Length: 234
Image (cartoon, rainbow, N blue to C red; front, side, top):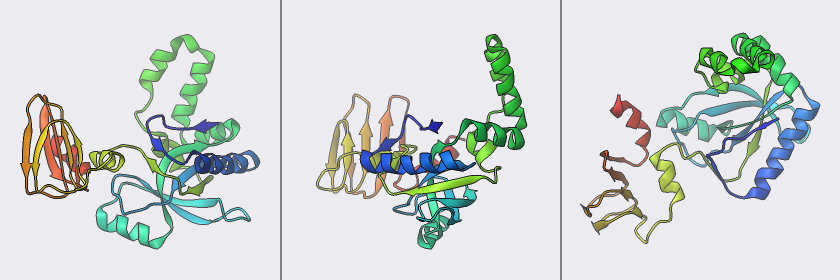
């Protein structure tokens, strides 16, 4: 069973399938929940991290998972990247259904019980689903199980979870600006500028900023700090 998020950007398909096949091969012959970890290219604070342990195969292509870590602050993310032991958590999982069921029954019995109910009474799926706890599979199972392994990967991956991620994906002009919509610019460099309004926006003398304007509101923040939007909204 391969679980792949639908809204992520993956480039270099050959490397992606090669990595995926490693994970499948290991999951077929071992009772492990396997996750693909992306080798970080910079100390990004918008992703969770996987701390890998020792190699669990002869080719050192699969490692035990020592611990999952929540989204860090910048200083902690720098430490993670410098150590060489941490990977971005891609949310891509591979496992045998039998292993998944067993680990779920041990580590997240409430969810396992609900799934069993659905299989017996599929007509009640909506009622049963409404009772389920609102928790991701990472929190509910992967962080609790002792049978988790990871396959490090180096293909380009981006889960587009922030405006910083959008900037990384878009084509830049000669000044390093990613621009969408009507702008008049003077001395603006390395910015993400998105204007979804009917008015032209004039911007001058800034570098390394994110500016997003829509009919519902306007956001201005430094690049690298777009994860703080949640705090602003609260």
